[in-house]
Image (cartoon, rainbow, N blue to C red):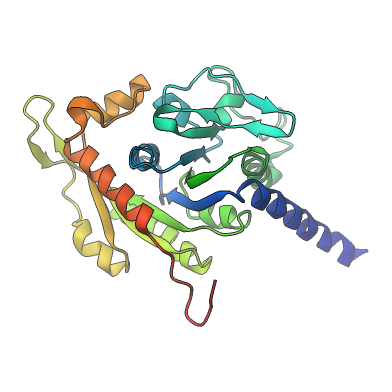
Amino acid sequence: MGEAAEAEPLRDLAQVRARVAAQLADVRRTVAVMSGKGGVGKTAVAVNLALALARQGERAGLLDGDLNSPTVARMLGLRGQPLRVAASGLRPTPGPQGLVVQSMDFFLQGTQPLAWDGPAGEGAPWRSALEDAALADLLAETEWGTLDVLVIDLPPGADRLPALVRLLPALTGAVAVTIPTQVSLLAVERSVRRAREARVPLIGLVENLGRTLCARCGAEGPLFQEVDVTTRAPELDLPLLARIPFDPALAGAGDAGRPYGEAAEWDAPAARGFRELARVVAAFEPVPPEGESW
């Protein structure tokens, strides 16, 4: 009886992985965007990476994996869109630049929060399992179709990437986002260690909000001066993929639900950074662990 009970979750996980694999069968690459802590602009990086990939001609999708604070729909102007349901499952919402998007935001009304714990807190011990199950459903029930790349915006925390890896047949790679502070880099280092323990290929590191642009003249200046990420990235054995400055136009575009990087913004330093990041991500080929083959 005990062995049967222990085997049941393994069978359930195998079934979930099989469903996810079926929905992602025509998705060529999956890329996770992660951070060790909140407040580093990770979602802005994920959204603009997906947009930049689409502008390069990639058929791109974006999954908002932050179930408790989903903001991808707002940043892409998709809030209030109806949940798209087909006879065989869910359909992603069409977004700008040909993106297809799935988010918990489409399931919620207004500012309604998710209540995992129940009125008396009875669900608290199972919160992590419930979150994992909800993420699995978003992946496994959405008809992603044929995509070159699916970008997955993960919530902050070192445990989020290993939880995702359990669901996926394979993850092409992960991008880590940090701001140039000791606290952020400490959290990122923990996330990187967990990623390596889970045998996830790491594409590299993105420095966000290290510099700022003057809204009037466009001149660049330091925003944080605590850490030089260009010297810390090699210590983490990661390439520095891009340095994205704070651009008031980028923040304004996200608040307005408008894609950043068009028209007058096309040649802005932040837009160039996202284009370079997309180029590297699109060209990335994971190297199998030593002694193994894929």
